[in-house]
Length: 107
Image (cartoon, rainbow, N blue to C red; front, side):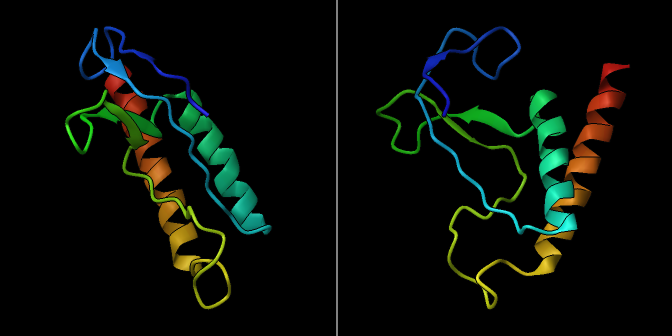
């Protein structure tokens, strides 16, 4: 759960309001799933998982959205009630790239 707020200087539109949001994601209870959760925690702490975008209907405050990292947001679906293993591999690769890029841009 993210409370509403006003964007700070290091955000896309400083001074503009953004709406509150609730985000959920589901991962398998496996070695890979636990690895993804650990990596997501690192990416979250580095402020890489979410960004603020203009509201889709333009009549409301800006909104918090995923920042390019795919998440399974519905517990149902997929042939085994979870997305295929390739999504887990994709998430791991994508987060590694985002963390690496973030570290390089800080140098």
